[in-house]
Length: 373
Image 1 (cartoon, rainbow, N blue to C red):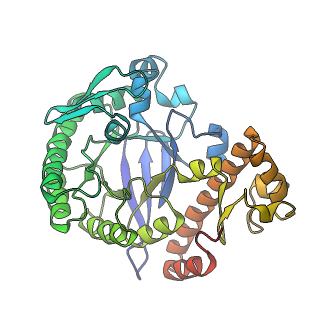
Image 2: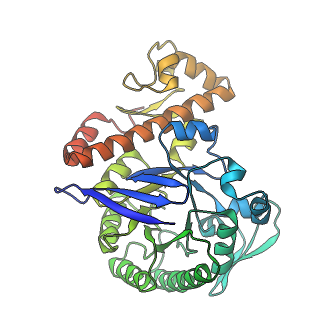
C-alpha cells in the first residue's frame, strides 16, 4: 500500500521531486504536513486544508491515546473517518510528547512510564504499545518510538539514546510485521550534534530496514548553523530510494535549506501557532499584526498573496480583530499562513522540476527580511 518514487533530481544540488503513494492517495514531495494535534488542524476544516493543497497531515498519537482513546477511534472507523480527512495521515510515536509534557517519567529499555498531563494518571508507553496505538488509529505512515535527548546533553547520554532508539526501532518493526495492516513505518535517526553517533544511528536503522527515515532530535536549542550542518550530514546517509523526513523544523528558510539537502517531508506547528499569536508569513518576511504601524493600514497582509484573507481584508481590520480577541482573527490568520506554506511548497516543486532551484533559493533570500517587525 506504500510506495515512494523519485520523479526528478535537480542536477545542481540534492533537491528532488518525489511522489508518495498510500492507500489514501498520493503526496507530491517535497511536502509540508500541517499538524493536526488532536485530530484537527487548529481553526481549519478538512475541506479547507485540502483546498490549500495539502495531501497529508500529522496527527498526535500521545494526545489521541489519552483522549478519547485509540480504541474509541478504532471503533468509530479509524482516524480518516473520525476526522473526516480522506487523504494521507502520518502519526508520530507519542514519545516526544511523553518526554516534553510529562514532568514525571521513567525511561528504561522496556519503554517509558509517565503520568498524563491531563489527570496525572500513570501510563506505560513501550515500542509495541506505540505501534499498537498507531495501527488502531489507522495511520498511513507510522513513526517508531525513539528517545529524543535534550540539548545540550553529555555525549554519554547521547550514546545511550542512540542505543535505546535502535532497540526500540527493532521492536517497533517486529510488532508491525506481526500486527500491521499495510501502513508504512519510518525509523528516526538520533545522535545529537555528534556526526559519528548520527552515522551509527543511521547504519543501525538501515540494518532493520524501514519505509522511510527521519532526522530527529534537532531544532531543540542548538545553534541554527549546527541544525543545518547535522541535517545535511544525516540526510546524506539515508538510502537514496527512501523518503527523508525532517521532524519538527518548519520556518520557511529551514524548508528551503533542507530541500537543497534532499529532504522530502516537513512538519511544524509554526503556521498555526504563529497565526494564533498574530505573526504572519509573507513573501517579504514576517509581519506582526498587533504593531501600531498597522492601525490605519489599508493594505492586505501580503500584496502578492491570493488567499481569502488577503483578497478581502485590510491589515487595519485584521489588527482590530486580533486586539479585540475575535475568533475570526485566528481563522483568517491560520488560513493565510497555511496558504503561504502551500504556495511555498508548490513553488519549490516547480523550481526543482525546471532545474532552477538554486535560483529560486537565491531569490527567496533576497526577498525576505527575517523578523522585520
